[in-house]
Image 1 (cartoon, helix red, strand yellow):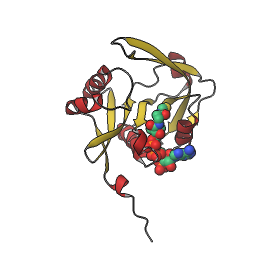
Image 2 (cartoon, protein in one colour; image 1 turned 90 degrees about the vertical axis):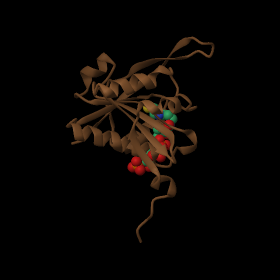
Image 3 (cartoon, helix red, strand yellow; image 1 turned 90 degrees about the horizontal axis):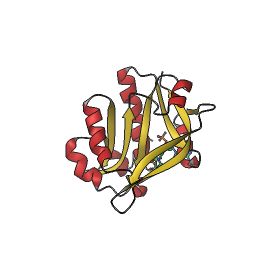
Image 4 (cartoon, protein in one colour; image 1 turned 30 degrees about the vertical axis):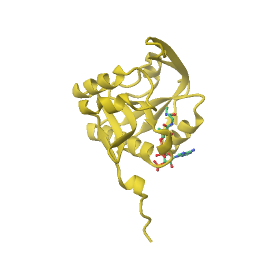
Length: 177
Ligand SMILES: CC(C)(COP(=O)(O)OP(=O)(O)OC[C@H]1O[C@@H](n2cnc3c(N)ncnc32)[C@H](O)[C@@H]1OP(=O)(O)O)[C@@H](O)C(=O)NCCC(=O)NCCS
């Protein structure tokens, strides 16, 4: 007997973000960082530097992933890994986790790389985020020895300003060949 995908998966769609999505992206409670990031990513996509992929269900954005063609941001990591595209800010709404949206975003990122002739894809994962790391390893990513590094970003401080946050990470890569 053929197993039917659940209703949630049947109606899931992965597509690239557009300017019209910005108000909806700004309202996402699960998407951290500065509000300008969405506009910036859509502009980078317009310059063919990145793809900003959205998971959409029933017309609502339930997850996103930024795929950048220019590889690791961290200079030391760049020297350790093959030339690769990089996944950043991969997140799914808490109520939709564990139901295939994240896997669909990762599959779409793999496909975009293959279409472009990019053989390797990589990402930073927090040393204290074993659940995300298990998902990546399940999906074929392997850790790069000696690639521990710190990822820093700006986020709102709750009173109109910005504050720097950071996470200690390891780098993982996947061979798409
Ligand atoms: C990481 C995250 C985006 C994954 O999204 P998700 O919708 O929960 O992922 P899925 O349910 O589609 O699972 C993805 C795949 O991992 C597999 N998987 C899930 N949990 C797993 C585990 N503990 N061990 C191994 N594989 C696992 C699933 O079976 C699925 O496999 P498939 O794609 O081959 O079908 C989501 O959990 C999240 O937003 N977490 C918080 C933010 C975060 O940590 N982001 C990553 C930062 S590096």
